[in-house]
Structures are given as structure tokens and as C-alpha cells.
Length: 70
Ligand SMILES: [Zn+2]
Image 1 (tube, rainbow, N blue to C red):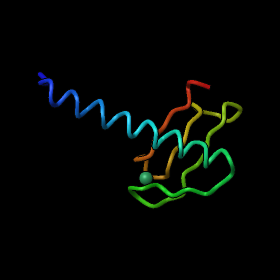
Image 2 (image 1 turned 60 degrees about the vertical axis):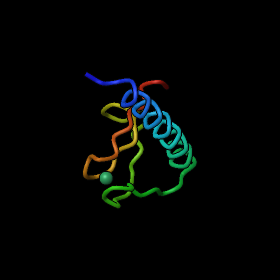
Image 3 (image 1 turned 180 degrees about the vertical axis):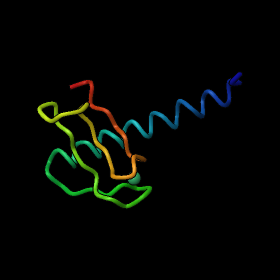
């Protein structure tokens, strides 16, 4: 069970990372080469025309942002 404090922390964390993700998505879509914060490999953009689910992915899989909202 999460207590209220933990839940608040979780909400803050996910809101921050959501904003970070949006910023990252914008940059990658603008054609910038962005590196994964965790492993440092180049983040690839998968568009809906490609095979697979659209999103941003790094080689190691630590960056895994799906773009199913497009
Ligand atoms: Zn990575």
C-alpha cells in the first residue's frame, strides 16, 4: 500500500518526467540527436509509418517512450 506521502511523491515524479519526455520528444522530432540519460546511446524515433509501435527508444531500452497519443 502506498501512503499519501509516497503517492504525492509519485505524482510529482511522473509529472516531471512527463514534462521531460515531452521536451525530449519535441527535440527528437525537430531532428536533433539526443542521447539517453541512462546509457548514452542515441535515441531513435520510431514513427507510425515504421514497423513497430511509435515512440522514442534507445539501444539498451532504458529510454522507452511510446507515442500512442499521436
Ligand atoms: Zn538508454
